Image 1 (cartoon, rainbow, N blue to C red):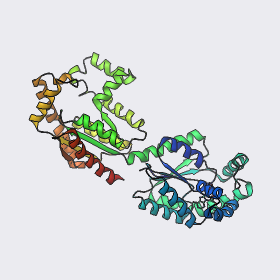
Image 2: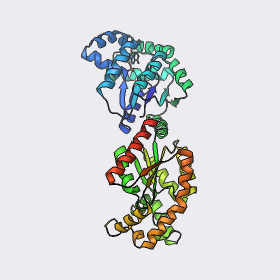
Image 3: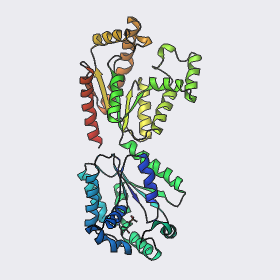
Image 4: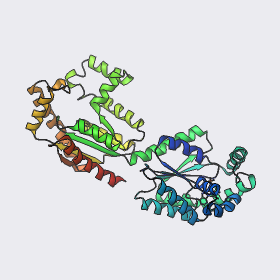
Length: 397
Ligand code: AMP
């Protein structure tokens, strides 16, 4: 889950920036100001109680705030996270937010403070008042709202600074620049909570078919370096052209197609995936890392974002069964050039053993690894792995 609170004086641009975040991420928007205005429009009891306070620029009681937030959360389950706007507005409300998050078995990732000088806020709000139709967007009330902000709301900053989850952005810049800064922060937070799985298994163990199905089920990006490589070539991208060049120069042998290629290419491919990670909750890596060097590279890429490997899963299938499966595949439409003869099959299995087993050992020591019995129907094996992934999600919340 990604939970963000947008913080800043009235007129900082919280509403505007929220719109952008909501479009990009599947978050549930909780603007206490909007919720209160809705209650007022409905003429509800809460609305009647809040009406005068808002009109004068004061702060509504915590009881009311908790009630409207709880109600709104209850009515809208099933989101990837929350975006709070205008809450928490007092030091006490910061505690309340922690309590609410705990109840939902999650926590606030960060408070993004949009910093704008007081006079700039006043100017913006007076302008907004011309079109917003909000009774509290007139100069007298604006000044009261700002006083409330500096007196009661600013202390909230300290609360989150101590927790180490305060991020500040300069809100006096252009909207698009502020947006970019916020996007960077959010992307960073998102990376921290990614579920990154390295899926190991011998050729024929079902890594690809299982990986693809599981990635779909759990909204993860499936990364098979071999397939990424082929895609770059097919789409004739800059990188694809470079890869072809390497083939032509003989630095990449066709029989190794999709297997071993220069590490700087692999790095670029994975970095590209990171940049385009929108709502995905993490990665399933298959066929990468293939060497010990690549395992260090992957750790480095993940650290940079900043993320890490959360699970190492190894699908185990007895060697004779693997040979049987690979030979069988050769007579189907899914056949690969490297399934063609028994000697190539055995060579691939041997290559895998010499290269990958040492990485699995390294990963097992650092991250621990879970062995999955890969014998059985597709569905049986699939459920076994899904259980492990579900467990992983619970751990990172
Ligand atoms: P906003 O739309 O965030 O500018 O809020 C408009 C008004 O609603 C504020 O001036 C307050 O009177 C009230 N309000 C909104 N959020 C809160 C909150 N978290 N605590 C207390 N009062 C709030």
